[in-house]
Length: 121
Length: 110
Image 1: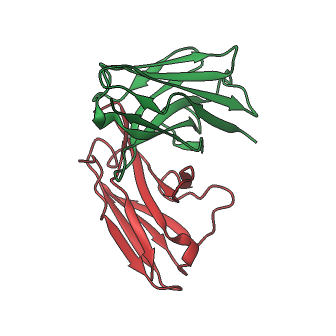
Image 2 (image 1 turned 90 degrees about the vertical axis):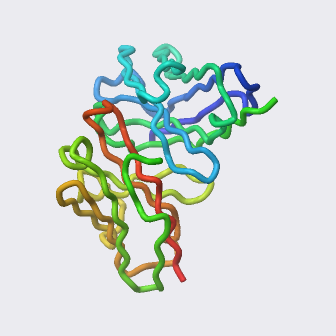
């Protein structure tokens, strides 16, 4: 059974960089069939797609976050990561990592449980 | 403000049928398929409906989806207390070149 788990600091200071890692178990991130993505949910609000990556490094980003986001993949560790720089309180959210059913235009079928990142001094 | 529009809330009594709407545009729902997620508090979102009307293995047939033009609907029949959750629609947007979600609908089982 595929499992995804987010990890990283739960508290980030304003103007600094949010960094999270998604560890994948029960399957290979290098599979040629799947993209992998990040989604966030601010408190009391809806889901927002952040971006997605293929094992080759090909990425798609939400245009509203593109200038601040970097998603990378480490196939040797079966992980992919999210970096969001210049964060503000508006970036406080539960962050989920997930797998697309197939290519980037396919929905997400496996999700992590999510991790809350709070931006505060 | 979400790209896809959903009602913020819906409700029904056990056994009833409820529907949740999702409105989009020609760049998302109008030309791409719609997916629905069920999100219970403190759990991972669950893919409920994909490709407008397909259910993943394990999803009861009480859940059904449909799409017409730039709108879609999720229907839940035989409502049960465990259906109380937040429901989100999602679609790929060809103009934004990315995924767009609805704002979510909180379903209350009275």
